[in-house]
Length: 472
Image 1 (tube, rainbow, N blue to C red):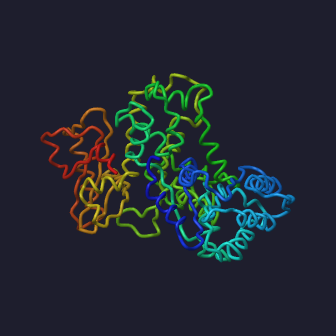
Image 2: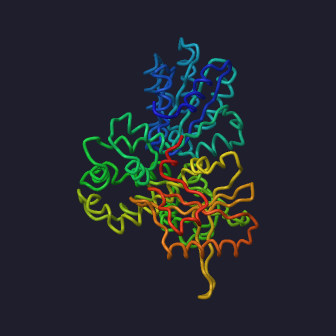
Image 3: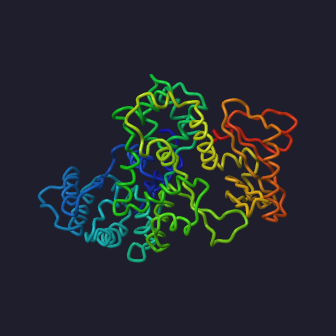
């Protein structure tokens, strides 16, 4: 298995525990939660079931009953509610001969249909029976991470503090994607791997569509733009499955895709023409927990100015290229590569790539042992006599240094000329004057192809390259 060594080790530790354990695995859809569990235990389950994406209580119970029969239940009729279903599950577990009885319930949020009392029945199963034993490992998964957080982690009822192990499964890093590429025999350079990452992030499910017979550009056309492309409608399916009861998360993501530097909660509410109510708070929480959006406090600002920023690469790619797209064009990407529009997208996507790999940047700068907040900053000019400035990535360090990062994605080493040097000087000047920071301000250049040394490059205190982003 590529990656996931730490998460797999945690699952094995839970399986070797002398107590019953309740493990919750959560993360964005397609990130590999089910694959992790199945690869770790290789079919050694006392019981396994996956919730249905659609269907009410009766259909969910019917499928659960079929799973029970698959794992040995005999002589029982279909349960009429979840209390009866979990009672039958106890019979199946009791009859299992394994020393540690691994119970895996995948996509658990889908089982919790309206008025089904599923959570109450789960509470009775765990508190009233399973937790009192020493031999049960209950593993639950869910792509609807907001449900996992609300119903399990922040439960104020009988399931409060009952989860004994939480595993957040993050997307792969560039390093892990490179391992995946090599394992699958794909002949790709690091710049090609980076471009794929900028389009669909570190989601293993998407990487499996890359075919080694074709170039990267050909693969993009096959995956997204050709007739019947498998990922052309992925965004709609993704959000329909994660947020079935509300269109608001999808609307928020669409708005954030047009404001990649981020928006405050009030800005989002005004843009969507809604009130900054609890529904907006819940939707933002759901997007944050699911990994689509990150929240941060801009440099030198109070907690009330919290900004929400879209970080999911596939969502950004969707709104840039796929939303409202023209009819299928099998050669769209090959015709677009190298165009001004493509270069604009590369620049924006590379900034997001750098943000996602902020830990690797810290290591490259030698500050991974220093507390540093990764944030952004911008200043709107007030009148023609003032300069505005925007910094999409900076590190506010505890050792009284601020690294202001400039991210440049070019196929050739980047050259700072007189005009760009003047623009950098203005940006740093505005930052110092407006923030009144007493910290040392260091300019860090993050470039895909390196930096050309000339009379203007001395302004740069530190440099990070694409190879640095591929570190573990």
